[in-house]
Amino acid sequence: MTSKYDVIVIGGGAAGLFCSILLARKGKSVLILEKNKILGKKLMITGKGRCNVTNNCDAQTVLNNIPRNSKFLYSAIYSFSPSDTMNFFEKLGVPLKTERGNRVFPVSDDAKDIVKALCDEVKRLGVTVLNKKATGLIIDDNRVIGAECGGEQFISKSVIVSTGGKSYPKTGSTGDGYMLAKQAGHTVTDIQPSLVPLETKQDFPKKLMGLSLRNVTLSLWQSGKKKPLYSELGEMLFTHFGVSGPLVLSSSAHINNIDENDYYIVIDLKPALDEKTLDKRILRDFNDNPNRNFANVLKKLLPAKMIPVMIELSGIDGDEKVNNISKEQRRKLVELFKNLRIDIKGFRPVDEAIITRGGVSTKEINPSTMESKLVSGLYFIGEVLDVDGYTGGFNLQIAFATANLAAGSIL
Image: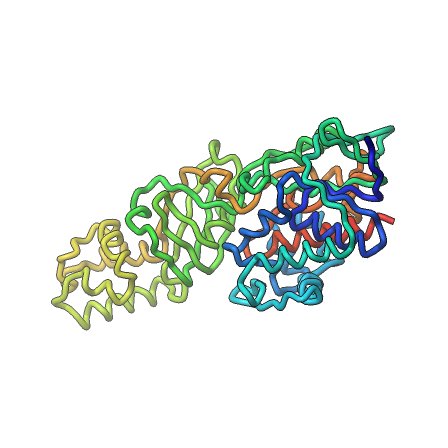
């Protein structure tokens, strides 16, 4: 039994739904093959259930927030910028708002509104949706002519693979697209978790579990390198296993071969003050309270939960009167405030990663169309590609922009 369509879209997530809508609006007959019983399952949990749909910035800023293969996405992002994404959803009846860091969310703070808007439009346009797993591509003479679902065949002029990566496997992201890509002869680069919390070698982060730090600078270093791989001001969080939060997740995107290289992060707890100014501030606090204990004076400088840890790391007795603290001890304290080092043991499991790093090699994809250079009529969009961005809505913007380019390329 065979059914014929203009386009088959494999994967009914953010990129697949978006692309299907654009194709159907052009009058194409579209089939979505989605193995989950519901569409947009992973989209439901993005942004902690709020759905950070994009980042309210210009195209170049998006590219600046894509640490790998950003040049490949130049045409996609400039053809469909964040403002285009925002206009798309607002025209679908989803009012949006911009929050700190230019993150864009639905006003309702509910990801279900984004998913519902996409699914309603898919239904309105008459897109066919089948809850079936694509088990293979049908390729004839280096051209894709359809997809298989077990023994069932579906014929089409074009096939778009939008299956996502391997992060959040419970939502269906189990790497199916990599199998399809390899069947077509494509290279799939090494798959690793990205935008993922980090486990630490030191135990003290566990003592700080639940403590969130704001307005700190986090730098990621690889041993032996003279410059940090990543450095940014923002927020981070201590956990029972190590560290998490926006700064940590973004820094994880720069870690390669974690089993072969030593990585560590350095936290500047007082980035607004240089070492000399911070030393004067600490000295002033000491002089204002010469007979108070060291632990009590630190209350002006640190969150309460952090004081015992900093006392331990400084080597200064918490009961020591501050007028007995030497200049050398104070220098070491300043160094600790400005360069709190934490060594990285490893990534948390891939099912805790927001996205997957690695995927279908961009060298084998036409950056102007998202079409395979190896098999005509075959397209790859979204997270299945070897592209990924920082947190803040950049990865969904990649999904929508690549979907737009592929839809526009199919005549």
